[in-house]
Image (cartoon, rainbow, N blue to C red; front, side, top):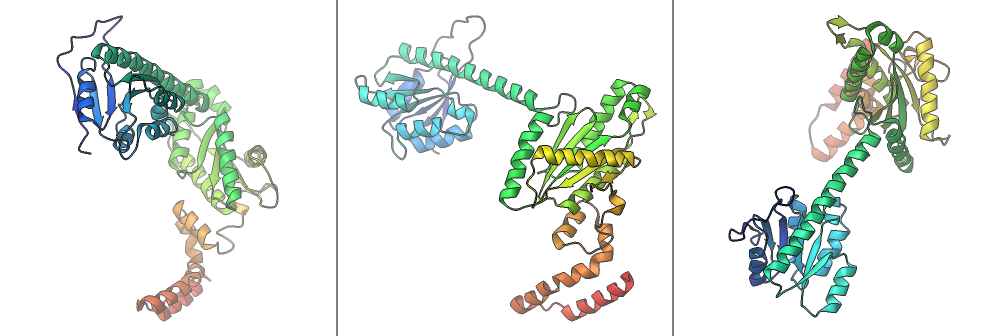
Length: 403
């Protein structure tokens, strides 16, 4: 945008301090008249940072690109996007910084109809095109203070919101926020007919750790476990500390097999990690309860979490440092997954992505056979010249070795 520039007027005397130095405003001036833009820029308070736009569309683009803009002064009659439409975009923006930004509209002195419409669309104040410098500076300073107050309130709101949704110790999502986010994810999976699973993770013998090494060591263990879990989940998984030494994971797009693979990966990661507190090695393992959504049984997050919690305590009763994925108390060693039957291709890919490629070796012939039609199709359409017959022979050899 050729009309963008930042100026700093140098002839305005410094503002009188009232309880501290006055922070210079950062203003966007949008007007198709270069003469009016120059007049407005010269009228700005000392050290003001002014960005100019000659039409509403450029002004809207600058608002989204320049996050430091605090105040808008705009004409109503502009090309490409007029001031009314610019106001509508500002007030309906999904970016709170923009939606709450003070806007001063430049109008004719007697144009009450234009003022009324602009006010209805969200204008904060008006200045006439022949306003003097004193009036312009006064209004800019007043609305700049309003902008700073709005910014402070927004930052406070963000902090309070983060505190309300974050576990104070681990900085993970807390129980309250987990139920909200996991419920939304579950509803989305149902709508798109996708699998969904929930895992409950508990630090084994945590009371003993506290009693033996002290509560500060207990906090250290929780922090380390939180980091281990964070490093070993997918970006769309929802991890939370839901109380004491208990953690929960909501796993969208994960069926029972995928969830079992993830649970076992987390268990192994905790088991193999070194927990050293004040030069002392602390033995730490975790137990995991796994539950997958049943398409034929409508359940909510509370019910899924309750079932996962019940399975977690089955795992703990069976000796801890293990997972349980059935109501009958089967541990991971009993779950019919990669050791019994060839998984579906999407399940196989999930297991490989979770670092469990070794378990797929016995199913390699079966998986290759499933993909043979793709190779044949590629040969027909692309004339790729791939040796499909040789691949079939290799599959037969692999099958004999597996047997």
